[in-house]
Image (tube, rainbow, N blue to C red; front, side, top):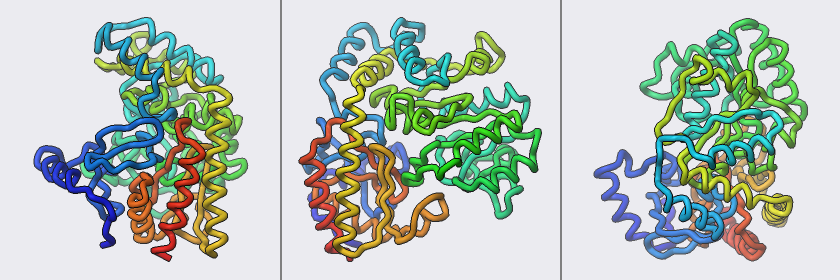
Length: 432
């Protein structure tokens, strides 16, 4: 195992204590750092584009709470909004005026959304969206795509056997075969298989759910006409199209990936940035779908902390800070970093793949193009692990997995990008 050239003694001590009271010592599996053969770091604080661990090591942060912190850590306006909300109450379990304001901001930016229901997480939003689709269509089966992550609800934790007509099997203990059997998992960016599968089950599919830009298998962008085909076949077969924009919503553009690719889904799932780092999720869409939810309709969904005043205040402040200049800055920084990485690769004669969508990027340690889950699996995870440790030792905090997206924030500066490129070049030198 390659050594980490950092003092992480306090993190190691805390990890041992955490393992005694928390399963695996972490509250979300990817935080365990197992994919990079390390023990997890414990973070003590963040400011702007930087974080510090409990051993006082400083890093340029490209995780940014897995994309939620589009303005980096403790932006003054965002913190101020939380403090003001806090003086009025932590939680009401009742309606409050700011819920309307946040909903209106979302509606104003997403042409496909007429109404919004707030929940507490992306997982909960996905669960609700699928339930809506089943209620509206009176069908049971759903289609998802391999490599797209939609949270940990039972119905989306499944995979398919070989053969395009094989229904899902559980990939998680505790998910029943009956639940998984209602899910069909198809390869992303494959139009022929999608069309054949819909023809095989013409009146059984309630919805297709998809990350329009994949973020949880590493960044993978849609091939030309793929999303258009997905939209067309759902209309042809009278099933709903759900865009999971938990990651891409307000990150790729004010109206998410659907605005960039000019596709109008029936239902949109949001999270992360709309809470500015506080827990939140949302389901949005046309009135005819959203009005199926109780108390208007007969699709039940509830949550004590839904629309929590602190989360809503944080989200409003975060979204109000997003301007045309913000997105231009994010694009410029993303281009500067990824073009710089490509140039270093060319100079060294290294054939690594880098996929980028705006301020999202993934460096794949493989020589061939990554366009779906299967092609991503060609990546050398052992080599990535060595690279990750080198970058961490050089003060660069990337997502601790080959198969995740990294995120740039508006808090990053050109000097952060330059330092990252220097670290990248040094990190490659010791493993190639």
